[in-house]
Structure formats: structure tokens, C-alpha cells
Figure: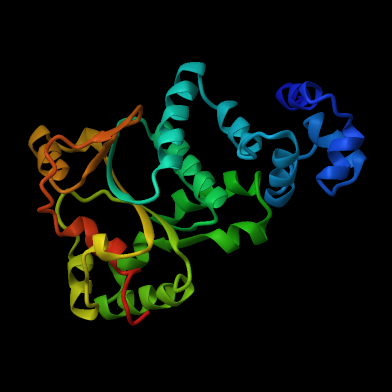
Length: 273
């Protein structure tokens, strides 16, 4: 399907396909395929075209998400995408009701991170990660994904001894040593503090995330349908931001008492990394 929005951007600047292709350092025939929807540009090409025509290059990748959602959900998710794009750091509790929207927001979260040049970490079960990876592989080359996204399976975290889990995170610390922007998505199913996460404290000198010069954006997700109203409130006390399927707002109950919420992000800000 033709990318009518891309054609409109080009024509609004009175440019030919040849002009755009030359300025974007690509072949005109290739650019024509991109305009006609027969080829999807890689991240670097998308940035080049976006710079020439003055639009957000993530539009190439967002269009794939829009195809799978109703117009109403697309508008709502666009608002969340814009909010996440503006946020450099923070801790967000995401209580979701729709698994479809949950998966949509994972993709959006990483698209925004890739655009910013962030390192992204997803902690989820293997099946979910493979689903997300298959969708991202339609948008990016495998090498681009490997440069930006890391995965840790929850199955491993629950089966390993705390010391082994700590060693896994220490390897990531080295990978993230020089990275200023980090995004972490942690999908959880437990309503009570994670034993393995608490046990990690003995292997690290956990510091307050607010003292770090790194920009760390952390989202901790739960299925809202299996959590009582009282548990909702208790969780919201530990996170400055609350996210639902349709919005991100400041948590009305936040008091900073939740020690679990900052342990995981803090693993990436140690002085001895």
C-alpha cells in the first residue's frame, strides 16, 4: 500500500523522488519502493529521509502498529507514545486490562527507545519476547535489534540462584557502562515482592536511582484483572507514575515507600560498573 503521507511530505516541499533519494544517500529506485510501500527502510535510512522531509522517522514504524488497532485505540496509544517519548527517566506502574494494548505499548516503548539511541531491556517470559521480537524484526534489521534490545527470561530468573542472577546483571552493567539512556520493561505476574529481586540486594550496593546521571525509564507491568483494589493502591504508593491502557498520570498515592520499584533500575547505576 502506498505511503500517501510520505508522498504528501515530499510534494509539500516541491521535491522529486530523485531529489529526496539523493539527499538521503539512497538509490532513487529504492526510495520509490519505500514510497509505494513495497520496502520498509532501516533505521538509518528512515532517519535520513525524515531529515530531508522534516518529519519524525518513527512514522515509518508507527504505521505498522496502526494497522493492527482500531482508530480509537490508535489515538489513545499515540498519546501514550508521545508521553513516553518526552519522558527521559522515571518509574511507571502499568496496570493493564487489555493484553493487546499491553503488547502494543511494549513495541511503542522500544520504538521510542531505539529512536533515542537507548539500550532497552525486556524481562518477560520467552514466549512473549519471541512474539515481540517477530514484530520488531518486520521493522528493523537483526543487527539493529541486537544493538539496542536485550532480553532476560523470567524463567531463568526464577530458576537460577540469586548469585547467578546477579552475575547476569553484572554482565549487562558492563554492556551499559557508557550508555546514558536506558529503558527497562519488566512484566510481572506476582502480587507480592519478588524473592529473587530482594535477594539481589546482598550482591550489589544499591543506591537511590535519583542520584544517577543516567536516564533510566522503568515500566513494571501487572495484569490489573488479578489484583484487588487494595493491592492497586498499595502498588501505586511505590511508583511516581501510573499507566493504564489509555493514559499515563502521576500516581495520586505515591509516597516513595516501595523499595522493590527502584532495585532493578539501580542495578545499572553502580560506581563499580
